[in-house]
Length: 377
Image 1: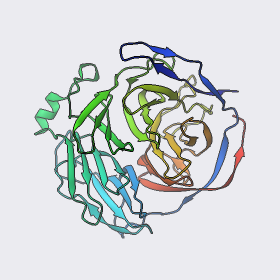
Image 2: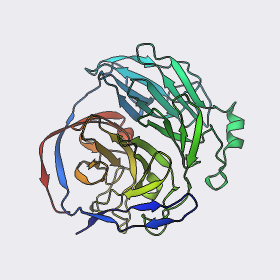
Image 3: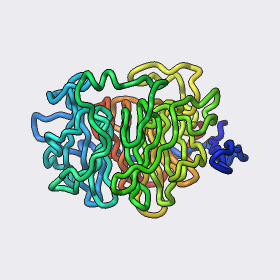
Image 4: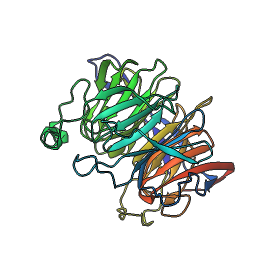
């Protein structure tokens, strides 16, 4: 039997060391398997159109769905290779409406799309190092840009440092991944593949601060808080707790909105290491703590957080702010209800989750059904 650990720390003062507290232990030996349906063909493309790699999906208050698609056929580049980003709009019934953002300078190799509480659409582009705010549809006009796209291929190549050499600057990004907002509409960008930090701006886009730096979690995943190995997704709850999917360190880090570390959350339900995933085998000595790839937090009260990993390919439902896993579903694979490198989540309510099922080239709409089946793990 295994237990789910939420490890808490406190910062006594800015210059004081982190002080370990007694960890809160939640029994995780019998996590329910959630009953669900994966709705067939939830987004309906016109004849002759196909999705490519789906990196992200967002749903606004009216049910409009925006899909971040990498079709592989775009010619507006190059970045490292050809640019490949397409923002696709679908109505609440899943009907294709059209593309968004054609010709926008900051679109090159986007990583995430999110709607804020005002239905503005935000796009985080790791290829152009831009984070863009677009007005609600049908206009979809650019209202704000954070960061700056490098001037050309050569400047991008020579300016891009290794993670060990990264020098994060105010107001600029290097491989940004996602965006979220607190109750005062301050903007938080997870920055990202190189800088491995969180950048905070006010609602007008003015720089406030950043925190975090590239680092490993140590021999145990609950070591070295604030050291981040690719903050791949970010989400903020109604109490302004900031949740970071620290993918490379196989953990979720939780901070307050000033960057003070609060605790770790782990996806550590045991799983069968003999299951062969979609792209590469899992070492037999792999830890149960799986890498969180994506996060989303539901609207309303109470709030729940959904998280997902690439292997074993499970979607988890957690309470907030405790981070207790109350149910899970799925496994890596190619069928409906299975996932192949799931890269983004949108959860308009606690029973509906849209999954950007990246390497299966599709969006899955997961609808939770009735009760759950409790099984020993």
